[in-house]
Image (cartoon, rainbow, N blue to C red; front, side, top):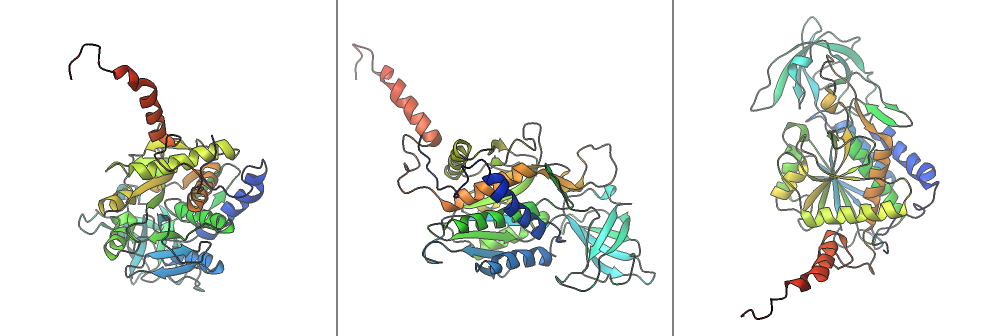
Length: 404
């Protein structure tokens, strides 16, 4: 069957993945993943997005809620309606210092999904709130964790005095684990969703090298971990044109039927809803072309109901939306082995991540003009159903002698 999608140049080659895709994906990972982030305190991650985009002469603007919208030009520059938008959130469950006590201990607020009862004793690294600050990170640990406020989502924390001077209100606290990239895995305090951010940046870079026909968007939202707040504001503000389909990228908790190493996932829904079927069909069609054309590409199609995703919010807001994901170990820093105490770094499969970058780039480059339109007899699920109808419906002819 002919390939329906514009694929990145060279991706059919046996060495392209190692020589082109892996270096680009690794560059994006090292650019984004070391940045500290927390709900309401995403300045470091936002600065990484801005720096990547501005270095490539892409357009960047912030909406009134602080979400970032990145535009990648098409063949005619920035003219014309964008074909697609890719979305990831900039935050991760973490803490922000609110007050320094006279004895040096720190009062902090934690936002996001991590059980308070696991926090005492947890090792924390503290970062200054402003990107580019000369202040050095400091270390501390959690002494006490209170109950979550159901209205605000806030968990009050008491932290030990820091390892050195500097921490003040606004400093960001992340669980103290290093970024490690091995031949097979990516381990970091934050993969959800800085991994999604990095995949979009790398995928848009790869697409831009191949010149998409029309502009493509990246939308980077704030405060997903405390109730989709940035996404809901983006919907209210109309940050993304309503006619543009939105594909949300996530690192989603692994499930028995969705394992790391089996490829990135076309996410058909989450624990709250299912997504837009025609857009899902586009994601699947692009994936099938990549399997046929690009050595090493694997993918999965799954209902990822271990959590909720902003694709639900976009769909409820009147957009066509769907999701892509990579399976994640130690979701929200809670060890998959619940017998373990404390925290653990999140982890994703490196080949899954690289295939996700390639998938994003292919979707950004779009379908070939001469390819059968979606719904054509050669295209996707609708095509398979149409072939069944044509082959088997003649037997539905009325029996002889029946009356009309």
